[in-house]
Amino acid sequence: MTITLNRRTLLAGAAGFGAAGLVALPAQADSLDDIKKNKKVRIAVAMGIPLFAYMDAGLNPTGSDVETARLIAKALGAELELVQITNAARVPTVQTRKADILIGSLAITPERKRAIDFTIPYATLDIIVAGVPSLAVKEYKDLIGKRIGVTRATVNDVMVTQNARGAEIVRFEDDATLITAVVSGQLDLVSTQTAVLASMNEKRPNNRLDVKFVQQELNLGMALPKGEEPLKAWLNDWIRTAFNSGELNTMFKKFHDRDLPKDLINRET
Image (cartoon, rainbow, N blue to C red; front, side):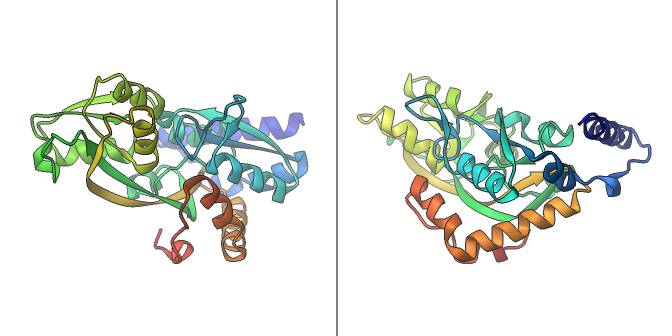
């Protein structure tokens, strides 16, 4: 056990030296071997995201990302250590190896792929701009001069920042606090995802927000540190098998009430 922890510590240190311009050793990383030897896997999830990762009535973690993590741990024959984090901590958690895998509704983007590795897509989500019916918003230029809420360090944050210069952007640390701001009447306009919007409208049924426009459909990938090729290959095989058998779609539909796209695992990553 001590040997495993020391090896992981050394790898984390090597990653840090690499960031400073020195030589890192990603090819020597093999978390899959560690997981199988120790029969324990650390999987991070971004909590507070409706339908993906949230607390149920009994204050137990649930949602499609949480259940996906449980399925993977079972397939690995390993005990699951669920590492609960915020949206903003997703990429840093992977980079610093505080988890072996991240299943945190994280969109696959070129910028993120420079810092961490992704599997093939395991799910999708639509990001949208929504607001009260009285607001005339149909595209990004209509956001200029308006106050809009976003969750920090998300694709929504990036897209609004880049495409609606002149908008007043109010950033929140996670979806839960964004939802609270909308429900309490602090915001009339948000950039979020459809699952979060559904939660907002459920809590304010007499003053619902309408979808103004769809910003983008995002492919979500499981994330892992650079250089973990055996673990990445194992996860890709698991996703393909679970998708083709229908297990992944059945579980996802249980929470989202929709099917995964038929071309999901073949999408360019």
